[in-house]
Length: 209
Length: 91
Image (cartoon, rainbow over all chains, first blue to last red):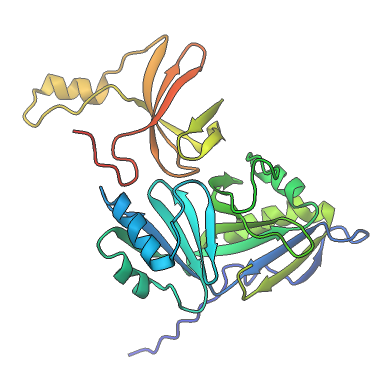
């Protein structure tokens, strides 16, 4: 029997070129960072089990799962609202994998492992909002989209989960984007084109922001 | 045109798909052929307030029931359709 080797690779591995992109005569206005190697589980309440899921989530994570378009964070996990009675569990280092969570939510929710099905892109920098404004119809002004605001929306006709994380140490806002792996390359090119005029600093990271 | 999704807030039309008339109700099993024909094919062409199902496919993927004036596009109500999220389907 043939031996298979399952390597997990980033969906952006072939298109992400670390370094500078676009305008060179200015300080980069945009940082684009891909985050690799995360655990991502979609949790959806079963019919009539919304309250049970909320209780189970409180027990499991020590905080209420978001029931509005928001993200909530603890030291080792971020819960991101993705629709009515459903949320995404984003974590690192195998602390909240599907095996572990399916025990916790066996009575209340259906789970689906999205760890290798999405790409996670973090957008920040002085021109981040100007660049995202070309792609998204959402109002991302700090008053309308504060830290930990989240949205399930479409960018460039592609479904994304967008949320604002903690600001960078220099005070710049950070916008996180989860996109389907098969659309990641297309969205990446669109974002590079939109960001080029501001100067882009491209990188990747193994750490959640 | 913008639609205020009860879950996501105000969003552009491009995130939504219109399914059509929300009024027809599935006939009971054993209904006559005429009743099934009506349910599947016949629609009123309303000039005024219409009740419609819309799908927020570019957002939270919830089905919505929207009251829209077909003459002005004014939307007077948006509510989750029966069975959205973990809700029980209304009997």
